Image (cartoon, rainbow, N blue to C red; front, side, top):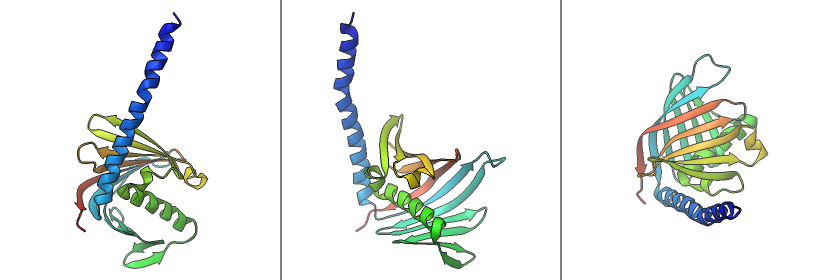
Length: 197
């Protein structure tokens, strides 16, 4: 009678390396794809769900990324606004006027930029200093869960889910679960990658 649970336990124990190897293979495939990307242009729809909002807040926009360190996150509707990140400098552009972000706003936008760029470049998947990473597959999607380790990031997010198309390895959606309980979902469309040298 005791042998059956032991047998099941040993079988599961033998399967663990295979599951780990599969996660490693998924991570390696995403990293290999990301390493080839020199630039990305895409549209996005951002949906914010909050207990403070009667309805979901929906914004649309366009994202542009260029290696080594340029990111433009441009909101088109409902309120035109752009965030620009070049190297360590993060700016906000409203009505044609740029303002460098400092203090808490600057730190938060730098973390957000680091996370977005880290996901494009793949470094967020290997950054054990900042995230605990979990992988799962569902139908035609790879889901990567990033759980922040740093206290400063934990104040903003409890977890981040990254959704990748299993065939193309395109990042199709991010779900950002905020520490407050709010949820921001960013869905990408019309994704264009530049792989040229």
